[in-house]
Amino acid sequence: MTRLFAIFLFNTIIANAGVEEYLRNIKPVLKERCYACHGALKQKAGLRVDSAENLRKGSKGGDILALG
Image (cartoon, rainbow, N blue to C red; front, side, top):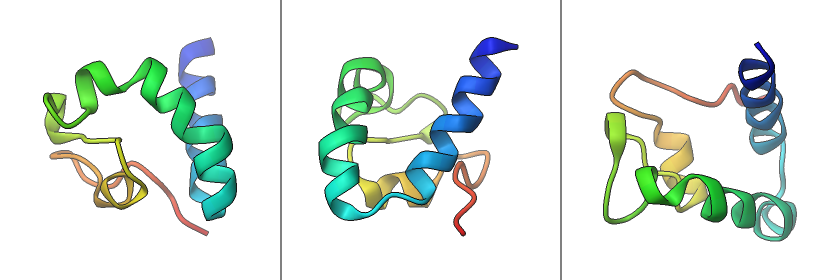
């Protein structure tokens, strides 16, 4: 349950972040924790998180961010 809450909270932060905040606070976390499975070389579930544009595209399962 803790992991699910962390994912929900992180998605909320990403969805509402500006460019500077994304580059300074969010991208480093994604690079450290997510790029190995969801980066340029590998995209599990069709999800690529190495850019804000790719995050907005979502995955094979649909949107991953709720913007607004």
